[in-house]
Image (tube, rainbow over all chains, first blue to last red; front, side):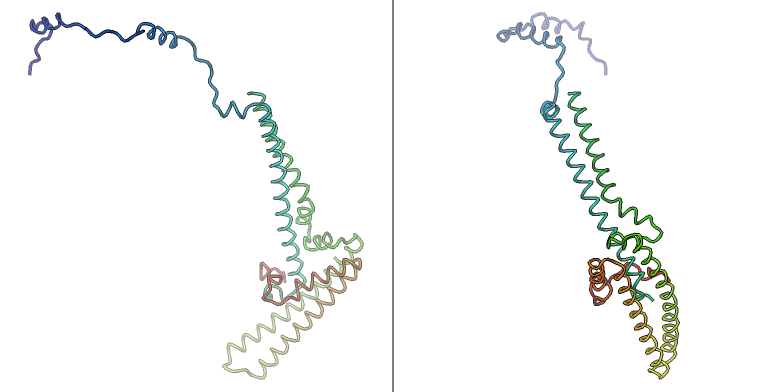
Length: 107
Length: 161
C-alpha cells in the first residue's frame, strides 16, 4: 500500500502552519533549566556509603581490630583445648587397649 | 579511610597469628606424643608425670608385658578356635566343649591376673600420689562393667597381636 506523501499534502501543510503552542511556560522555567544544565556539568563529589563512613573511621577500625585479635586468640585457645582433649582421650584409649587383651572384644 | 583499612588488616593478621600461636603452644605436648614411636606410653609419661628413669622402667615392663600378652592372645585365639569348631560340629554341649570353656575361662583369669599385676607394678614405679591416681584411672577404664562407656574402645583389632 502506497503511503501518502505528507510533505506534499496541501491540507496537512495548511493545518501545520496554523498550529502553535498557546500553553504558558511553568513559572521559573528558564531558571530551572539552567540549574539542571549547571548540575549536569559540575563534577560529582565522591560519595561514600554510610557503612564506610561509619566503620572506616580509625576509632572504629581500632575497636574492630581489637575484636578480631580477641576472636583469633579465643578461637585458637578453644580449638586447641578441644583437640588436646580429643588426642588425650585417643592416647589413653590406646594405652587401655594395649594393656587389656579383652578390650574391644579382642580376641 | 586507607588508614582504617590498614588497622583492620593488622587486627585480622594479628588475630590469625595469635590464634595459631596459642593453638600450637597449647597442643604441643599432644602433638609431640602423637609423633612418638609409642604414643600411648608417651601419654602415660605425660599424664602421670613420670621421670625419665621411671619411664624407662615402665617402658621395659610394658615391652615384657606385651610379649607375654601376645603369647596369651595366641592361646586364647587357639582355644576359641577349637571351641567354635566343636560348637559347629555338635548339637549339644560335650565334655570336650566343657573343658575348652574351662580352659578359656582359665586363660581369661591368667590374663587379667597378669594385667592387674602389671598395673600394680606400673603404679609402684610412679610417685605415691600419681600411683594412686593411676590405679583409680585403671579401675575406671579397665575394670568397669562392660556396658559402661569407659570400657568402649574404637577398634576391636587395636590390641595389636
